[in-house]
Image (cartoon, rainbow, N blue to C red; front, side, top):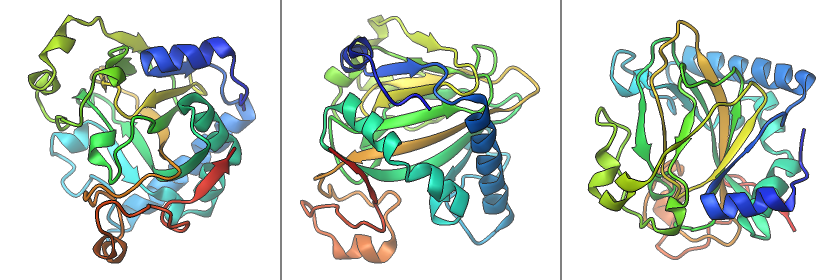
Length: 264
């Protein structure tokens, strides 16, 4: 696993709001991530009472954007071992320029054969904390190409984003209703051979095209929260009892719900 960053990569991330790290996983690591993620997803989808997936109505538009399974580390030992790796936290924290990283949630995102496009959106406005330093890692388990739905970014949008957001719906350009000035930006596609990691700021606009192939485009991701973040009133994936006990401004420091995986 590549865990050391060049100064140029850190500078590129902070300027553009994303960075691509090819060869992030070696072949053995990639095989392990693939097997672990597929097993965790299969288990989640087989458990009809588990929730935290978007496959209740498999024919719905969003269900065909990708198969989404959230918080797999909570239910799968192998996934927990992958996600709690301190090296991932250090990588995210170094790029974000923060001294501590907690897991917000992991999620597998498998774009199915002939799957729908992923509309332009921001990540952090969905979550229960608001931070200009939120960051996610997206690891390609299959080759992600312009044919099967690789990620696209609008560079630098993390610098001008507010917390207005559009859902991942059928209209690819709904986000531009809130940020019409971003229509002038040239999008950047990020084809990613399997084993590549792409990291992006939680306020960087991103999306993906449709999968025009007959094979899946699988990715495993994790969203990270800077240590010291506080509750903004949105529940998102917080457990019901924990959410009910919080008030706006409370420190989100529950080590079971949001493990601290790295502190500098």
